Image (cartoon, rainbow, N blue to C red):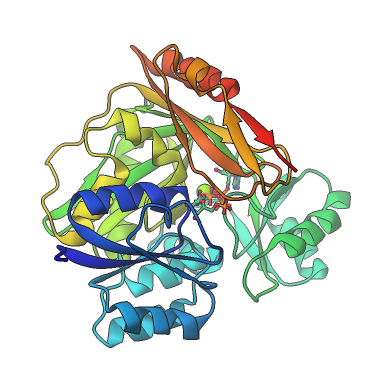
Length: 386
Ligand SMILES: Nc1ncnc2c1ncn2[C@@H]1O[C@H](COP(=O)(O)OP(=O)(O)OP(=O)(O)O)[C@@H](O)[C@H]1O
Ligand SMILES: NCC(=O)N[C@@H]1O[C@H](COP(=O)([O-])[O-])[C@@H](O)[C@H]1O
Ligand SMILES: [Mg+2]
């Protein structure tokens, strides 16, 4: 069989699943990897490899076996030192091994953004034991947000409002951290007016931005997102300038999800993903080229349009309530009755709050789209067979 390129996808969740669709439309052969079998992206890919992305030996083996044109990380927790070696040896890591390395841990990207690039961030300090957590909270003031340096989707994250809560937050972070470093970031709590994801595409001819995406989070995890979200010219200019600085520094080609908090005209950099972003799933209905299409094009060196537009649209997540390894779904027809669309990720197991699907809707304005997407998400029922 002949393909346009071979892609080794590291992480095979819902974002990878949509990326596989976009890449395969452009003729790619995709090998999907994750730590468990039948992960969402594997179900659609040409081949699969099941191993922990933190297992450097297995990672190298997979690269040597498939000889991919592009190694595309889909999660943070990857043995990135091996990505750096592979890049040295001539493999292409997306967007770059340096980007994967610096964003895997919150401390590396925060230090780069705040210290080297001079971006505005919340006050922060790192800690590796309870004593240091207490000292860090003195520095940031209360409330503060405590997160493991290696985690995503809010895992191990909590907001602490009084000194008495610090110990519990430290224990919670330790119990939920990934990787091998017992280290947290303690951040000043930002009382923002709203927060955005600025999807930023770095491609062979330059850098371009999607209209900003607004989102709402609970427990550090996204619940709904909408696009476009209104921003003053001053605020959008500041966000774009900061996003450009950071993606140019990280280098390589691909789409980045750059997260900001906005308070008045003040724009505060939070973090970024050097790959499609969960809140960007709204682009599945809002943009002609979705964030996954844009990532695939940028990676493969294909043209990106000079302007990216979005029609008013929203996404709302469908979350599981409990653990199960036997799942079924009901209510899709009702959910789609008012024009919304549903994506089911077909994850083989559930756990409390695990994201199992997403509802998508367009409308005359984003408020109406949010209502439609939320209603649709509520109509999908997950059935637990065990
Ligand atoms: N310093 C802060 N002040 C106020 N809210 C915060 C702060 N840090 C995080 N949050 C809230 O928690 C959410 C998740 O935080 P963050 O993006 O750092 O975590 P994450 O685990 O990397 O999430 P994801 O992987 O989904 O992007 C933010 O979008 C925001 O709503
Ligand atoms: N905020 C990052 C994010 O949304 N990542 C997405 O979630 C998957 C893991 O889901 P799981 O924890 O249900 O396996 C990842 O593989 C990626 O698609
Ligand atoms: Mg985030």
